[in-house]
Amino acid sequence: MNIILTLLLCLVFSLGACAAPAAPAIQPDAVGLSFTIAFVGDTHSHLDPVETLIKISGKDTLLQAGGLPRLASVINGLRAKDEVLLLHAGDALFGTYYFIKYGVAADVDMLNALGFTAMAVGNHDFDKGPEGLVEFARLAKFPLISANIEASGKPELQSALKPYTVLTVKGQKIGIIGLTTTLTPLLDPSGPGVKFLNPAETAQKSADALSQAGVDKVILLSHLGYDLDLPLVKSLKGIDLVVGGHSHSLLGPGAMKELGLEVAGPYPTVIKDSEGRDVPIVHAWEYSRALGVFNVKFDDQGRLISYQGSAIIPIGDDIKQAGPGGQYANLKVGSAEYDALLTSLKPAGIEVYPEDKAIGKLRDTFYQPISFIGDKVAVAEVTLNERDLAFLVADALMWRAKAAGLKAQFSFVPVSYMRGGSIMQGEFTGAPVYEFMPFESPLVVCEVKGADLKRLIELMVNNPSPYIIVKTGTPYLAVSGLKFKVDNSQPRSVIDLQLDDGGPLDLDVTYRLVTTARIAKGMFKVAETTDFIDSQVFIDYARSLGNLRLVSEQRVQGW
Ligand SMILES: [Zn+2]
Image 1 (cartoon, rainbow, N blue to C red):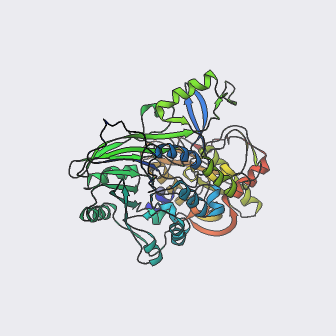
Image 2 (cartoon, rainbow, N blue to C red):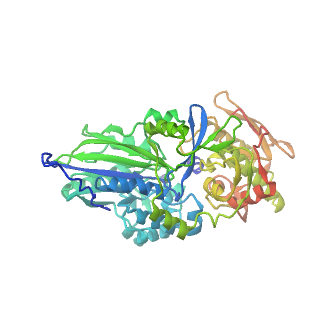
Image 3 (cartoon, rainbow, N blue to C red):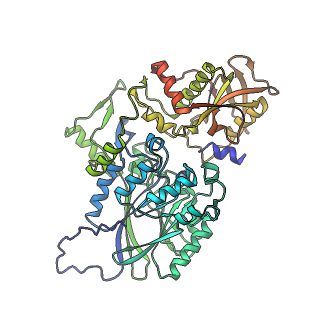
């Protein structure tokens, strides 16, 4: 059952041109070392900005957040002031059409151009198999690190990865240790011959090795997730700070929450290690929407003595706001209203930045974001969130199954299959489709007994797994061709399972359902495979409809 739950989830030392003429009276730091860490995690092939919805004084407001060329501008500004260690906390790959079309190449090329210093291996960095990760490491101009990956069964991979790396900043050595989620084999195709060892033990081993080698400043670059970073730190010694990813956590002040952003904790979140020393933990959200900035200062014993920073969310100057009728209109750049809005965003770390021209050019000329996505697919009559989309995907699967004569009686799409994306009101291309459903998973027909289906849905109803990325109140499962109600007396149960064609579900009968291979894995017995790819099925379905609207019927009640 564990598998089921899991499946549902889902230096460049630009020697700071800081030749700021120091007044003779000011002494340079007599001891210690200070520098700037800039970082991202879970960029997931998001080279372009991400349309991001916030609420300002009750008004829905759309921002164009981040994108690698815009993050580059922020990084350039930091490099002009200080030496910058640029880190990636893992999961560079997978999530947009760039990955579907170019594999590892577009991401690694862009990260090289930004001048990354080191990157932790994330589970999704295995999405093209161990061979894809070897290719990534071969192309990357920065080391890929993970202390808990044991790949002696895959010698090429073993030699492509390192447990840690040592970099020199202002003449002093900094150790950086990588960690990878041990759930990787369940989530992504890391394949046989690759083991994921205990993170705490392996991180401590690397920290001890660094200490013995005289490296007294150590950063842990963790792709375990925020919730696991906290207890991990308590058990370790010799780690000065943690830069993390995997959980897509945004850390920051109340000002972010006031805009409707989901904030997981303070930036940094400080935890005491096994020797009682404070260890700050920082994360910086997802999809290249934010850049984590952390200025650190060490004393001459290698102890972290001060730090400060925040997640910066750089946005474009095209800001849209919903009027009383729900229609979005651009705010006029430079108007009083626009300026007031920017002022109100500052406390949340949201500021307008241009895209860096060189990095933008690399993306636009070589990777051509628009041309391959194609033109208009359909029109969304309203903005469709992940729940709405899951039901539409469920309908699309049934539509395709029917047309192909697959004899499926219903479809099954966990809302967590949608990767938190949305389709904004208005005309849309294939781009958002590849973002909310980037798996390229083929349709399959599965067989399931009525009683097993009921048990499975009840398991989902009673186990809101941390791996299911859903918002509160969102039904976890979308279906088409089937209806049911949830009885919320404990433990919660599923009642009134009804098929659209055939009345109540018979617990003793075996049914045929349509879903995707990725969803079916470990959950259902696959009876028939097809060549229909999920995203293409959705695009074809949307084209056939012309206009997308909410699926209004109450197929799932009480959940
Ligand atoms: Zn991950």
